[in-house]
Image (tube, rainbow, N blue to C red; front, top):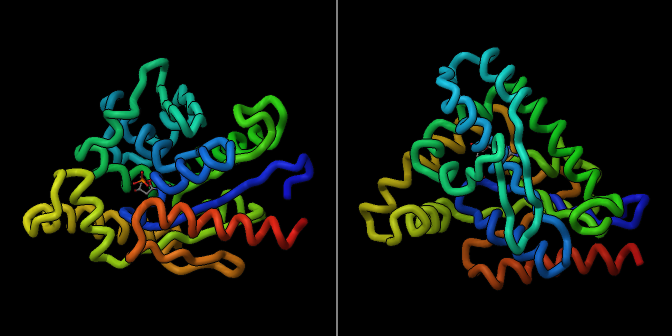
Length: 238
Ligand code: DC
């Protein structure tokens, strides 16, 4: 546990593992804050495109991200994200952003800047002034268990078979899981994960990280599986 008594839960996993919905619901039930770090990379891509930058121009992108006026609201009941006062939650989920966000997420200077902000946001939730009132945070992404919060109390890698992940994303994006939707999703999901895994390892669990496989579980069952890992940790440290 954090010196202040706050609980930090770190959850990593590939696209379609159910990470975001599961982390948000776990945060809500434990009355913790919820930090979606993928949304920060998406907002960075949105911000750079908005400024007419070429995402391949690594130093210009890094400079723009360092100046990005980003505001994250870590309320699991109503998470919000604004750039320069403009709410971007919907726009950053577009296929347009999904297909280019890796270019920003694989920029190491961008990772350093967003990583710094993520550590600050996590730290703020361990203090009484944070949204959770110092209760703590569930932070999810690709490198939270390994790079951003390797000393988190509970560290989980949420995995799912390729088949399950593609079906979930197809349902999210196309509203169906027929063959055509799954195929349309395949390139996006697999190519993005392959690209992202060149800079962060999120396919195998690091030492001390508990793997939860959600392939055969629905949302509620996955939430319960994650809560079980948290409770086991609490029982050990009590
Ligand atoms: O989880 P997501 O699809 O919203 O993530 C968006 C992008 O950001 C994706 O390319 C993976 C990347 N990402 C990352 O590199 N590190 C994180 N901690 C979170 C997301």
